[in-house]
Image (cartoon, rainbow, N blue to C red; front, side):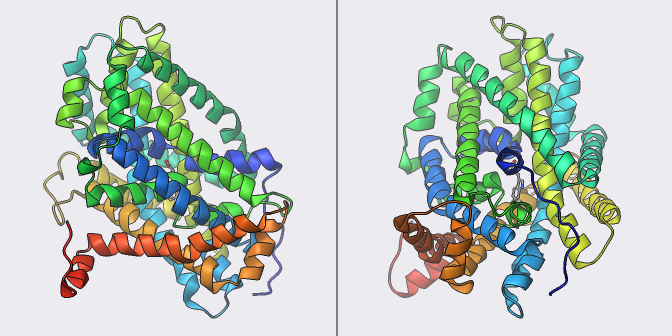
Length: 466
Ligand code: TRP
């Protein structure tokens, strides 16, 4: 492929890069999903395993993706085609486009809920309700057939419109102002949570690890979520990396995005878990509705000053955080369609949006009228989440690590990383060990364990562990 590109868009300045990449990483994963899965898997131990995965697997793979993107200046498929011509690595890109489809179809359903909660907030719907009423409101809304699907469609149209507007104007300008505002809002909610009388129990639940509560499923979820939250494993950061200028320091970008994403997730977990009533923590009542039930109760508290405005602001910012993430997922598909299949950008966006919206509608209905349609005991929503988050992202991440560790050439990797900054030898050595061995082997073992194959193999050698 020696085709000279016309002008390929690039991010302006350093802050633009970080804002866009952080805008992709910070989203529903941090604020909606992390608190509820932490709650589901019993707190502390899950949190520490998650943090371990972020550091040992997430960060090195993030750097790998950005390296691949910037070096190749291509979409997730074209990147491998250019860097390793004639080799099968490029199928990682196709796999990623598939994952992007699945993820966006359920992601935008939850984003649609958040959109609806802006409307609930504006119409002051929580105010007259007690906590049982707030639970019912969520229950009735998310299981109904029409309204959630409608908000999902609106959200997809919004996402598509912004992606058509292009990389620069669309993505950057949105992320720059609003993410810091979200951070401020979370800090206020944290202060509120930390000064409540039950704060101590919540903190113990969150940060005092009880490893006996951690299951293998929890470990897999922690791994999958590390990928999900950092937007890794399917080419988002390859695609975004391809818009980064040569002068930018990639290590700094990767570290800053990882730290920002993790801090936001922990702040969200503190704000939400501490506000979950004691009885619900014990009984693990929670699930995907957790924030939609817990937060309106917080906004309703008598000592919550300006709860009405807070609620509007919070769900607005959550929706926007979801939007900047959704844009980055859609961008993977669109960059592939337009650069590889030579579709016009508008057509590519339209085509992708329609398909994803349709799949999303089924997903939305799977909370209500299609609740009983299950595969391996999972509803359509859970199935898509399982396949994409727990299987495809870790697998994609493993292959990306293998490519950087073994496939691409140590020297070329170092040169690309070092561009735009100076690097210490020890850093590169640790990085190489992580991408060559630690990340791929741990991902492989966890996936093997989950499919039951690990027990089978170990059983053959007389080992048994539970
Ligand atoms: N990281 C985003 C979040 O936490 C979601 C997201 C954006 C994503 N791009 C992705 C997840 C790529 C997986 C892969 O909300």
